[in-house]
Amino acid sequence: MIKNKNLLTGKFGGYLALCITCFVWGTTWVASKIGIAHIPALQMASIRQFLGGTCFIVFFMVYKKLPFPNKKQFGKLIIMALLMFVFANGLSTWSLKYIPTGLSALVGALYPLSVVIIEMIYFKNRNVTILTFIGLFVGLTGIAIVFYQALFQQHSPEFLFGVFLSIIAMLSWSFGSLILTRSTLQMNPYYAIGWQMLLSSVLLFIFASFTGQAIAMHAITAEAWWAIIYLVLAGSILSFVAFIYSMKKLPAAIASMYAYINPLVAMVVAAIVLKEKLTIFILWGSIVTLFGVFLVNYSIKRNPKNIIAEPEQ
Image (cartoon, rainbow, N blue to C red; front, side, top):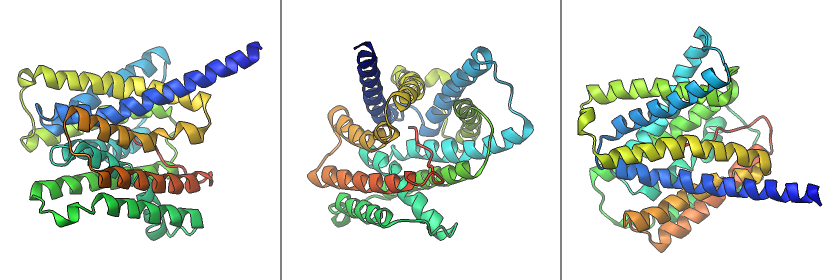
């Protein structure tokens, strides 16, 4: 009886942690959208990564007593910081200035599809299954449904630039994932994420300053600071704790479902909070797209040699 009770408690806690992960990482897209209305996008991303990275590094160095990274590790950390946080997170945040929240979140969720295509073309990987091709077809069909109405509308150059930024961000995460699976950093992965965040914050700050995308710290509004605080405490700390807990308590296939729910959460919350348009084509196209992504990701994870890094927004 006690054993069954502990099992039930563990499962319940795992599902609760999964729900927290889905909701928080979905709403971070909306928080970012609110924040960049009051502060330049790259500057906000820089401040967020600095605060989040500092929290991770202090925890692991002070509490876990982990050593300072060596020169070789720093070289790899800088490369991963560029791909995963400067280009991927930074550009996806910037894209929110020009395109709807749900669209940016959906493009970001396409990374498993791009990883498969990149591996097939660039790395000449032929270790793909029929299920992978079915997932690719379903995913691309979903994208066609999402953009069905958009094809008959006149879009501004800013909208197209936002889509471009979002796609580059997604591709950057895909390349970063492939490099991550092919290199050995020999560090605690979350300690490494902390250093990647901190390093990326410096690079983003330099880029934002030189391109005029920065304002004085005293000019940052309370709304922007609240968005940043939510992104750091909820998006970078609480959600990571919840994600790790759900991975320990639930099967990996269930715990990873958050990646397919996040964009839908972003769309619904953005429609409620930001009054963004949510049509039947966008909703059903997104569901079809994410189902295709699920099929591709499932076919990849059946092969232990192919492991893709999960994105964090």
